[in-house]
Image (cartoon, rainbow, N blue to C red; front, side, top):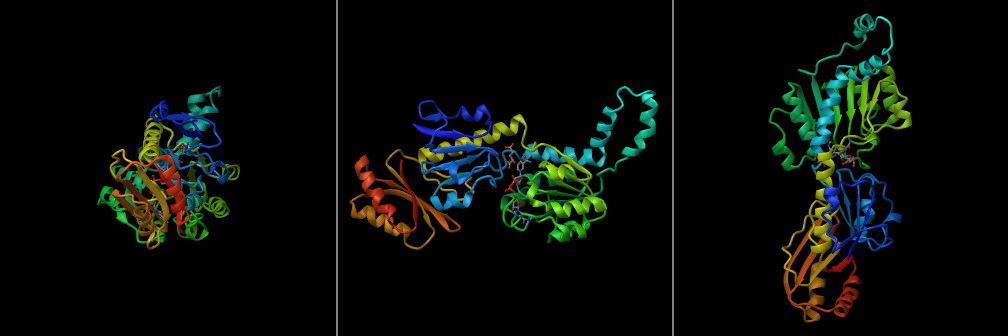
Length: 389
Ligand SMILES: NC(=O)c1ccc[n+]([C@@H]2O[C@H](COP(=O)([O-])OP(=O)(O)OC[C@H]3O[C@@H](n4cnc5c(N)ncnc54)[C@H](O)[C@@H]3O)[C@@H](O)[C@H]2O)c1
Ligand SMILES: O=C(O)CC[C@@H](O)C(=O)O
């Protein structure tokens, strides 16, 4: 029986995929797996029993991924599963903001009992003259699952689209319309665009990437949309840019007390992925990936380990996470040979400094033999996790 610790509200269509015979969703001190959305997970939430963590969503900045990697804990996310939801909210906000819809609706609510309401409407409407997005430049920073959809949708709305992504994947490049212009630098986006929309992950490298030096280069009155993460933008510099009018509007899905008190901010309560469809897509993908890993050791869509798949034939399977250094596999297979264990099949894949190996044994071995082998493999320098399935 696998124990799963669930944080956040996860769509039932996903959690229903945990069969009652094999899984218990429970508050426990020794979970095998963790399933969550934006819950801020710290090392204290990750006891030694945890084998994998599944994030029903894209961003994993709420998970201590580097520590998990060192301990051989596989962290999954659900690439693309909520991208359409975010795209639709970005496009909605882009148009609504351009037409001053947020302010206009807010004002209209205040005149419910006003005298001469119709006349007032005609007089005051000049305050809410907006601009059209057709023909304007939009810069998409980060052309991944969401950025590609936003870029293509903006093109379909007759905008001029420039995308910047120095690490674009082959898949994203295939999906991006050929009419999207390629920016060779962030500065190119800053100087050319009337709208800038952020779609890259938050990391040590991207924290504060939008700051005074960028704001200085932007067009007067530029509108910046941030449906990615609040910390991508330096708040001191944002405040100055909003005060001076350099940034005409900051549309963000990540409100905090400070940002909400800034001028010309439109904020939504982290709603990007909040559609029924997206919540279900993410939950289903997260649960399928977590189940597959726990039950077969295969890895798909992990942020810290490579995809590794070896058809599960139901014989005894040994899975090992280890550092990506020479002779790891050699030492492990030599150990099996020394114990007269034949190998039926095996696979090894690496990602950065760490690697993962699956070895299917040609024979079944009992629990005691497993424990003896585990003890011997564990002491090999560089091995971080060993599990028999
Ligand atoms: N508001 C929400 O509810 C919501 C929902 C989903 C995702 N998000 C946020 O959006 C982010 C993007 O999601 P996604 O599904 O498109 O992820 P993704 O991994 O598919 O795409 C991210 C892209 O950013 C690019 N990138 C990385 N560093 C960059 C840099 N310095 N400059 C430019 N591009 C860079 C990567 O190459 C990648 O193509 C997530 O990390 C998450 O923080 C927010
Ligand atoms: O779970 C959510 O509602 C938000 C998820 C979103 O921020 C993500 O990174 O996928």
